[in-house]
Image: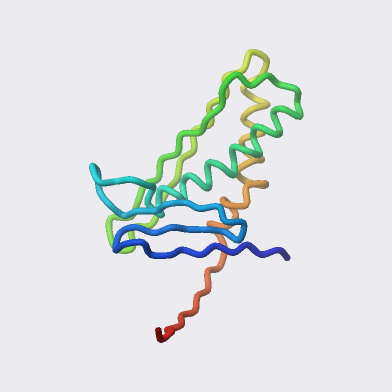
Length: 137
């Protein structure tokens, strides 16, 4: 079983930076427009889901030797009105621009990507545990 580690560090009350062990960083903020400079945690969840399923879909289409002129996923998350404002529904619209791909084969690839191969989609069903610690300066 492999593990991943990320550290999220406060920069300001509504600004954070997430970094992994390799030093890759992502800015996060909770500001409203027009002060927004980075994605919110809930935006990042959609981005992670889209990125994960995009890679799988593109690789599978390329294995089928299909031409990819453009590819993108539009994600829409519907959130609960209360607190916490979790996603109650997430819709992914996969768009492939290709002269030689067929709708049926792409639909099968999309289903495999989301339902079988995307680790992020599967993680949305996982058990979450937590602990806490206070350190004195």
